[in-house]
Amino acid sequence: MQSRTLYQKLVDTHTVSRIDGEHVLLYADLHIMNEYTSPQAFAGLREKGLQVRRPRQQMGVVDHVIPTHPVPIHARTIEIVDAGKQAANFTKNCMEQGIHLFDVDDPMQGIEHVIAPELGLIRPGMVVLCGDSHTTTYGALGALGFGIGTSEVEHVLATQTLVYRVAKNMKIVVDGKLPSGTTSKDLVLHIISRIGAQGARGFAVEYQGEAIDNLSAEARMTLCNMTVEAGARAALVAPDLTTIDYVSSRVKDLDSALLDVACKEWRQMKSDPDASFEVEHRFDATQVAPYVTWGTSPDQAMPIDGTIPDSAEGFELGAATMRKALDYIGLEAGASVEGLAIDRVFIGSCTNARIEDLRAVTQVVRGRKVAPTVRAMVVPGSGLVRSQAEREGIAQVLIEAGFEWRQPGCSMCLAMNDDVLSPGERCASTTNRNFEGRQGRDSKTHLMSPAMAAAAAIAGRIVDVRKEFVDA
Image (cartoon, rainbow, N blue to C red; front, top):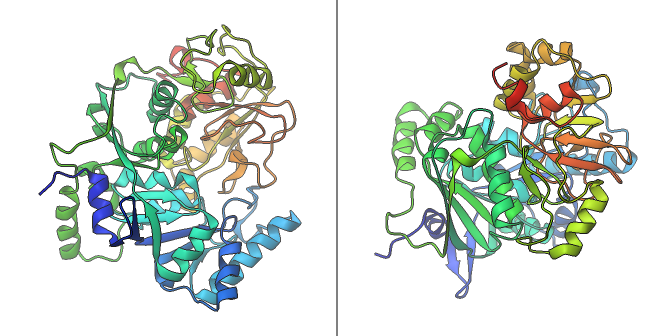
């Protein structure tokens, strides 16, 4: 039998039929929807007189447009008229089709890519689809997850399948251990800055190596979440004991005997030793420093102790794009971002709003105060994360330090709600994208880890967390 990669095995086990040399009809174990990318899909079903084929394999979440004001859950309302209509329409569609929805006033509500894993819905070997590009997050648990378009959402609702173009295979090996003061967010920014924003275009990426083995399940989610920023169509980490411990502690629908069988099967899900990858990269984790973006694309990033490149060599889109990014962000080639004053700090998003992220923030800010020139907010990724942070005393530490402690949602990650930067404001952000206007018109975003963002909030400027805060 031909040796296969983990990605190829997942595709093979979910292929209903082969369409041609590049395409298969792929079965989806779980389809996740939000209020933003689903309305046209439901409308298309109605026009064709179709029903959702398998409602129990769908999940709905209101997360993109929901406000995060720190009010009780039952008092949450969407004041933006169009957003409110969008959410209400989504609620109506889910109710009519028998789809479980985490609605505005649900205590379990949160960001789709946070709540699905924490509820035990993502398991090794699954294929998970969602109308959101950061569905790659689920590869951290050995599941094949990727984003789909609105027309594809309609097809999945009607058939539980997808016409899928099979990707090529890429392996990224990360040797060594991450130094103190660095995280998987720094690692993925390091990787993207090296291979470029299109460096994994058309590929399913599998991560291997000592550094990956040493990452927690939640840290791997950050890694897989942002791999799409290198153009990847999927990202995977083969299941191991870390994966199994995380998943088995959250699965509620399997008795102990079935769970034991499942765990044994999950441990066997890996690439064959001699499987072929079209492209391979190798990185040394010991060389990773805290990273910060300097431009308007996630690959425009550098170590905090580095300087902005003084030439466009190595950048795919060339000198004009680099100049445009620097003009927008208000910086110059050859400059450092260390010491750059900021106006806002945002800690949240499907990249970095899990409990481990908030613990890391607390280690930095405990006993300190947010700089008087900074407005800092923490938006937990789900109701469960929020309640756990409150039980652990994390929320109180953040509030005492001067952070706004808010309700869950996508929030300022993409400014589709009322959490928006004002024109000209500069933000230290734990999100995944720093495009022009991503967090608000004419706003300036610097991506970094939760610890780095926390340090920036305290200092009032972008600083190296290792110098003052790493042992805090």
